[in-house]
Length: 299
Image (cartoon, rainbow, N blue to C red; front, side, top):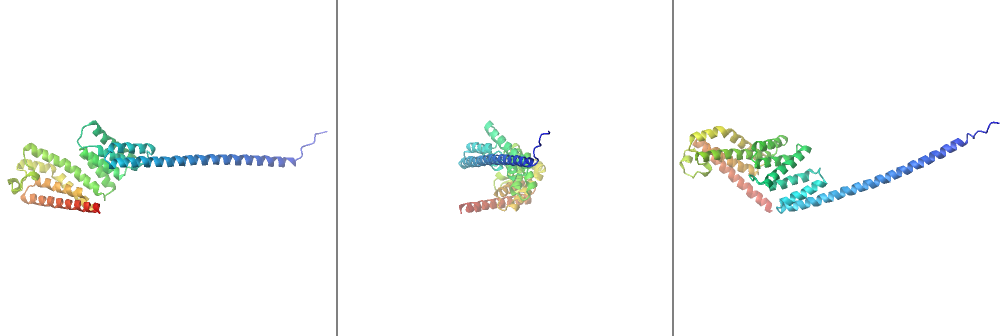
């Protein structure tokens, strides 16, 4: 006789029980995975909070040191904050400021030169992430100007003006960088020739009386030919800054200096008088702007 077959009615029940067990195991695995994920998320959130607190603490210590004039410690604390949060542009810019304050223009010590180098390095990191960062571009222009890298400085300010045509600081910076270069070259040429600059000529002196602050006409003409275009461009840039910011004392003082320089190279009494009058006017406006700012700060 053939053995009896297993009843077909038993198969669906067995399959159903197996399916139930599988679903239970899957549900258990899901709950375990969910619990693990929740723990991981909680740990991640805790680390984020801890990092945030640590960054704020280091940043606060850095700001306190900065306000107290201890720029070395300020830089140290800002670096500590960056080690925790390397992506923070705001903290990196504060580190740039701390390095910038340590740099003394003209100083040739290794520490001084390193401060400028470190500042420019941090600026480069900011601009790598954000090429249009206005604060970084402005700082780069100021540092390059302080290092007597006038072409580089004007390039930085030009980049800032290109992305922000309403930046008074950009135009004031461009003008000031050119002024430092041009005035230095003119004063050096005058000193070597034994000429007396207009700014130092006594009132009523012969050079001022005839409108030729530089008595040596050949020297005056040579300097005017070399620098008149730069002087005009500098006056235009500083004037643009004042148009954008009517209280910009830096631009006003730059205009004062530009017009004094232009008077130094004046070709006629009328031209000389015009520039001297303009210089006096911008000096008065700068002093008025300074007084107004002092009054606002005192309120």
